[in-house]
Image (cartoon, rainbow, N blue to C red):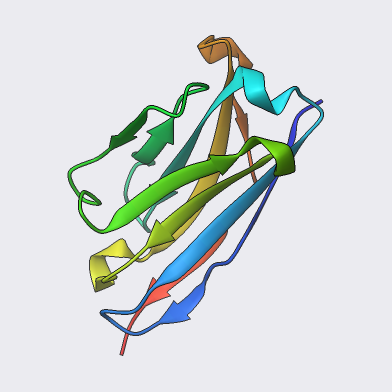
Amino acid sequence: QVQLVESGGGLVQPGGSLRLSCVASGTVFNWNSMAWYRQAPGKERELVASITTGSTTYYADSGKGRFTISRDNAKNTVYLQMNNLKPEDTAVYYCNSRLWNAPETDSWGQGTQVTVSS
């Protein structure tokens, strides 16, 4: 059973930075594409960024130029570096794994709260 454990969320002022981490277990990490999603109150969960097994990255328009997704296969960890944070980035951020691009294998972490406020 895949387990994903996120950390690194918190309260930050506008313009600040946070780095989220997600450690995976119960799977061969190298075989999984990884992604970060977020869900704000009253809104649907949305994709923030993703990284393939070959480290090809994708960013939603909301995070382009501010967010960087990366992975460390030796540590079974995916990161999301978030810079120049805005109040609209406030949400619960979820880590997602997908084995061999098969949606039926999606696994989710428990989420970590990010609040951007002065």
